[in-house]
Structure formats: structure tokens, C-alpha cells
Image (cartoon, rainbow, N blue to C red; front, side, top):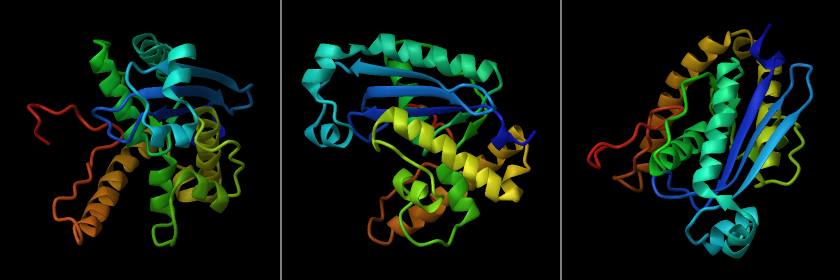
Amino acid sequence: MSWHLGRMCGFDLETTGIDVETDRIVTATVVQCGGGQPTVPANWLTDPGVEIPEGAAKVHGITTERARAEGKPAPEVVADVLAALGQVIASGIPIVAMNARYDLTLLDREAARYGLPPLPTGPVIDPLVLDKQADRYRKGKRTLTALCEHYDVPLGAAHTSDADAIAACRVAWRIGSTRPELGSLSLDQLHTAQVGWAAEQAAGLQTHLRRTDPAAYCAPEWPLIPRQQNGDR
């Protein structure tokens, strides 16, 4: 059976910012869907232990005050998310994450922060990487909202982790259904192919950015940027 017809697990984080090394999880969603079985969502609201910047709160709607009042302690949430994703990986279900490099790396750094074991290796599907490979010369944005519009996928409440996680699975399904050169690959083949495609895409973006910023750097690794050693890249 083609990967896009099987069970998937959407994963999405809303966070305090965009730096995977220093920012924290505010909300998290792990939702299993598809494969002819019921959708099973799990959602978490975290007290990240730090202030949530106003700009981030405007994006996802979670203020520092609400997180402190209603959120579970960050170490507990990180452990729960790692356990939920670990169970999915052990079941052979792919994790679907829009811009997986961001979410999985930030989760990895949170795990290290609280002395928790890293997530086991398993197949990952990244709609952003797939879309750039399938339609590399298309003009316009490649945000999840833009991809949902392009592939005619309902999004719901954008920038909430539960809506974004489900939407990422739907975009992945649509790409696999409409691009037989991608949909016909096995999960292992697809994962391996994305490692190469993501590196090529990062190199192209870095070249573009260095036209105006000679120091611009885009990590080539996917779906996880390795932890830094002694501050070196």
C-alpha cells in the first residue's frame, strides 16, 4: 500500500520564537489520522518557564499569563510528547510535520534541556520538502496556509498546533495522491529521498540569502539538526 493511503501522525508545535536552540514549546499536538481508522488527537498546553514574547503570543494566542495558569510543567509535556511520538515510531507510522527540521530539532533541544532521551529515528514526511521537490519553480509563499490553498486543503484555525498538524497530513496526502513519482515510493525510500532534497533546498536558499547577507546559513540536515559541539556548526 502506498504511504499516503496508510496511517499518518501529524506533529506540530507552537513556541516562544523561531530559534530551535533557545526557544520553548508552548503548545504541542500529536494526532494520528487516516488509514481508515478514527482520528486520535493529543494536545498539550505548556508552562514553558519563560516569558512568551508578545509577538509569539499574537501568532498562536497563548499569553504568558495563560500558560502559567493553565499549562503543565514543561518537562512533563516534553516527556509526554516524546512518549507519544515514540509509540508512533514503534508502530511504523510516519510522523508528518510541516518544516520538520524546525519542530523535531526544537523538541530535541527541549529533551536535552530536561535530561530526557532523544526521540528514536523513524520515517518522517515533510510537506514543505515534498512541495518544493514536486513543484520547485512555482512562485509564491510556501507556508502551510499557502500550501493548503494550493492543494485545496481545509486549514481551520491556522497557527494552532492541532489544526496545523491535521492540515500537514492532508497536504501530504494530496501530494502523494497527485504526484505518482512521490506516492509510489516506500516510506523508507521517501524518507531517504527527502534527506537529499532538503539539503539541496537549503543550499539553494542559502545561496539566495547570501546575496544580501554574506553570513546567512541554512542547515542542510533533515529532519533533525544535530546538537552543536562547543558552539561549532
